[in-house]
Image (tube, rainbow, N blue to C red; front, side, top):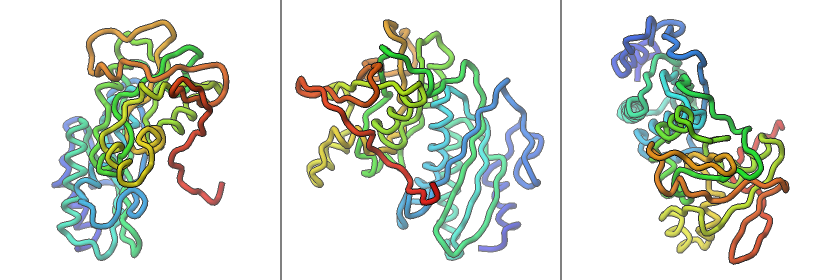
Length: 307
């Protein structure tokens, strides 16, 4: 596959510098224009065996690692500008597979309006690891996960559950929706990306907002077709998949009590319809068939032994 410096020269052809970058790929660091008063930064890795399995299309893997970061940018209500890409490549990785990976990275960056301006390359005898750092800016206010209040309605931007059937590689970050919630006169009080499952991420939002609770209307939760299909084969309830599967990368957001979202914008009619409300009683409560029962904040968490 050649040496690191040869690959760096190739990457300069794959990812041309944007016009507002003084220095891009090829130096010790990139030098780019800060397009806003506040920068928004996030970083997320994709690891073979954890986020994808060997044999899956590396073009989709490249898209995934970029879009995971762009989804976090969207959750802050920000606009994506630049990306840094770290490649830890298995020594036996074929050149055509690397090209597939780079093609996916480039396509997702372009679709999100961002530019790859630098990064690093290393080799390993272990699994493929791709890490992207995304840098954006705010054109409106910054959306935080800590602003939910009692009485706020709870919303999601799309259907949930069954992502393992393909959406975990093919999701589209809700950049337009996040930026609209931040720019327009919306009464959005809190927002975050649904990456680990609705229940777990909602619990995280409520904890950040002071330890509040929430009631979820089971009938109002949008369930993806994939969740229904998987339920027929593995027996796991489709609703529970929608509540806890993770890797949906939709936006979870709350709207101030008594307020409605303004007309227009990219939100679908489904996203405008609440799935529940924030309550003062700590915990998560599912309203189903006339019953109110407490549910655990289930979802996906990485097992970190050092904690």
